[in-house]
Length: 446
Ligand SMILES: Nc1ncnc2c1ncn2[C@@H]1O[C@H](COP(=O)(O)OP(=O)(O)OP(=O)(O)O)[C@@H](O)[C@H]1O
Ligand SMILES: [Mg+2]
Image 1 (cartoon, protein in one colour):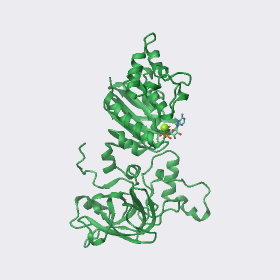
Image 2: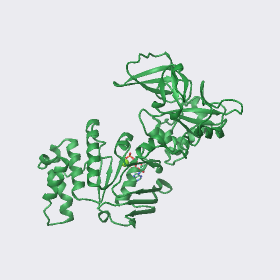
Image 3: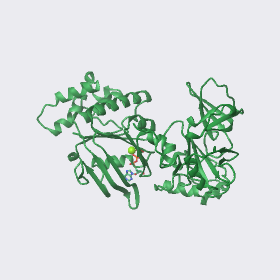
């Protein structure tokens, strides 16, 4: 049996007034694999624990197969939880660890058939007589998974089950989990802060920020049509370039988005998406350019829809199969508070005190207080020209472009770039996406 799980306006506060989960609504279909994704502290585990019955729901409703389930005991919910820390009984063999919940469920029954079948499924038959201390991390996690599966639960709740493992094993087990849950057809909610894991596993990905649901969509849709700048910045590597821009839409000339010292000229006739930018005339926006939107090429080789930009090479990051080139284009990066590290320390030097009352500071304080304010921080919204970005540690350059490793680029070179406007994202001052238009119907059929 597999079940539908619904949350309707669910909230939770551990301390009075400070909601760590804020009116969360989600409908998870039977057999679906849903990933809850978000930065540390955004409430992912709390959501999972409320679904499991380990944490009380303050407000809102949990429905299991359409039935009100807020007060159902954890055991009555028939769900299996897999944690980050494998939590095996150290003095029990793998066989007994896997069989333990079965013996609790039906005392007197012999669990060995189920244990053997589960072990076969996970390829751990030869580990059944070992104690957890005699297993590697990956093997222990397989046994923990076996313990969850053997019971044939109606849902799996997995809380960062792979985060203690090394990268190679994580990728390997990720594929196993995906295959296994598909075979079993059991509804799965999987918590992670790793966007790559979320994208590779989920039928859908729900992005949380400060306890508030930002978007729930297929992996392709959250990447291609992020609802706001937070989702855009959280999903995809290398991270989307976010630049502060200013829309200029004169009645008698071409529409441009100024990016500090340079600008993007939008080709005429304006596309439907670009026409929507007209109402932003004179306003600051955030321009989002994923690495596939920019290529290094002579301006004369521009294809239709590509516009020129020039970058000064600041840093070249060798990655083996590709290089990441950090350019200075004379623009200012936009800041998404939760995604910038490190956070500013208290007791800043006097020279920076001017910023105390700025929108950026207030946003940071709000974020620190666990409240979800606007998504993006523009220092002086409404100002005519973008101001310099806050002086905090960041990677050099304002635009990162991916290219092949055969290109000989050195620090200080001026390089021609082409921006493909078909891949242009524009967000308003609140961080909501303007371009592609919210009504955009992409060819995203799965
Ligand atoms: N028992 C508790 N009492 C008080 N505050 C709590 C409790 N459990 C969690 N919190 C707070 O609630 C917020 C959400 O915590 P939660 O564990 O759900 O985050 P998370 O998204 O799972 O983070 P991580 O990725 O670090 O595991 C955090 O600010 C956390 O400090
Ligand atoms: Mg957690």
